[in-house]
Image 1 (tube, rainbow, N blue to C red):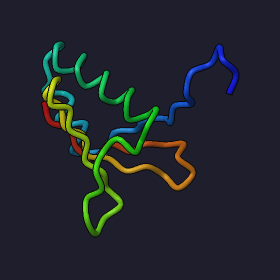
Image 2 (image 1 turned 60 degrees about the vertical axis):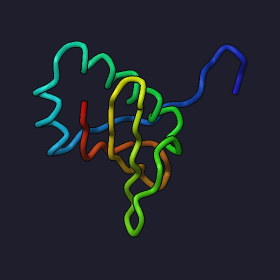
Image 3 (image 1 turned 90 degrees about the vertical axis):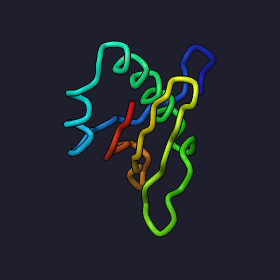
Image 4 (image 1 turned 90 degrees about the horizontal axis):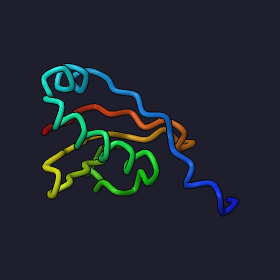
Length: 85
């Protein structure tokens, strides 16, 4: 990676019920969620593994955001299954 470029990010896709939750968030909550999504897209290992599944659970205690997601095999797409703010 050249010094002028940052880390490669995966494309983020939200599915139900994440889309339903997203529609209920305030502007402030959406802003906090955006920061969490960017962090996850750059480093999908941030979340902890959910035993027995492909899911990962990311909790940001400072921003009070929780994202449950999984990453495709090639790590090019992050699929968000659930958000909580």
